[in-house]
Amino acid sequence: MKGNAVAVCAPGLQEVQQMVREQYTTATEGTHIERPENQCVYKIGIYGWRKRCLYLFVLLLLIILVVNLALTIWILKVMWFSPTGMGHLRVTKDGLRLEGESEFLFPLYAKEIHSRVDSSLLLQSTQNVTVNARNSEGEVTGRLKVGPKMVEVQSQQFQINSNNGKPLFTVDEKEVVVGTDKLRVTGPEGALFEHSVETPLVRADPFQDLRLESPTRSLSMDAPRGVHIQAHAGKIEALSQMDIVLHSSDGMLVLDAETVCLPKLVQGMWGPSGSSQRLYEICVCPDGKLYLSVAGVGTTCQENSHICL
Image 1 (cartoon, rainbow, N blue to C red):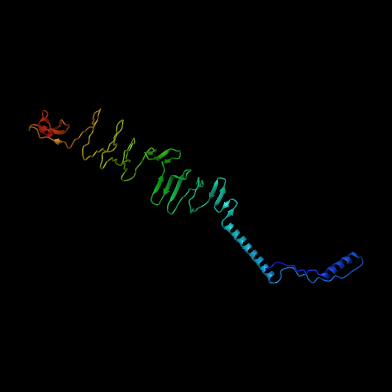
Image 2: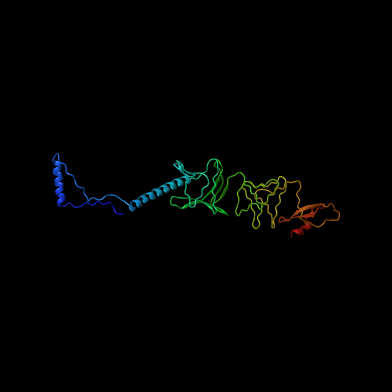
């Protein structure tokens, strides 16, 4: 479409004379001369199909503007835009506040995440939930990974505290510390320790047996001020495939009971026919071996001394 144009004829000699005549007539009072119409001036404007196309284009722009405005208002309404945030997301002076459930498709970086006072904080994923702590250089210094089959903690030290800040469970490369007053193992197989265990008391549940055993190695119980073994309502039984040694370096071995029974001691031969009281005496060999000998008027250990050989 071309722009508006004005066509004007170039003035000739007659036109110049006419202009001079008009100036003279204007200057002379009381005279009137008719001025001929100028036939060389064309009309200015847009007419015909160009005008209709222009109006159609302006109308199309107005329709597009109204549609864009309506879509903008609809998006603002659907996304719940407001001066304080968008949807369930609110911008506060303390940070961002998110109401309801949210799904994050990429990693979330935050200094602090906490729930409302009246609800709990739930983190869930179809694969795993990983929480990383990084230093100023971007290196991972601590990691908590909750997977479908295992919970993994990677850190220099792992510690669980009570409500008042008391350490309940602490783990590092050197030791495991249980800060509670009591550690209870409820598994049917008990607890398995590959190395030493230090504790002031080992006790079974009421009406349950306490067993300390080592299937392939030795079992040692050491204490600087003594080892105390007590059964309030049962018996104490020590079983060994080899020897059971009771040794005291500076003290003595005391068997304090109303009856001391040694049922499997080697028995000697019967004494003379006159002694039929079925009484026995305990004899001791030079190497410490004990055996029974039928009691007589005097000692009969010499008669059965061949047992010591």
